[in-house]
Length: 88
Image 1: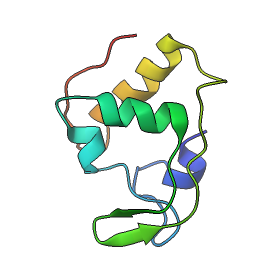
Image 2 (image 1 turned 30 degrees about the horizontal axis):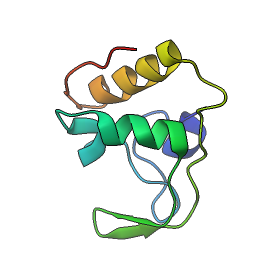
Image 3 (image 1 turned 180 degrees about the vertical axis):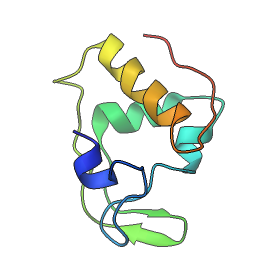
């Protein structure tokens, strides 16, 4: 689901969908913002100096806690990212 926008290598699509590789929310020691983005979505954010207006959908109604943790952990440990693991 994520790679269609953020691309298989986490680089996103310039001006449309932000990269996950190197994103501060993916790298933060505290995963609260990262998990909130997965659950509730996001739109209209400036990331790395670029404004992204394409909405990130909310997944709270489709993913259980284990799925959210799995997605977060994949994003936090892929494409050169290295951040503490998330637990359900």
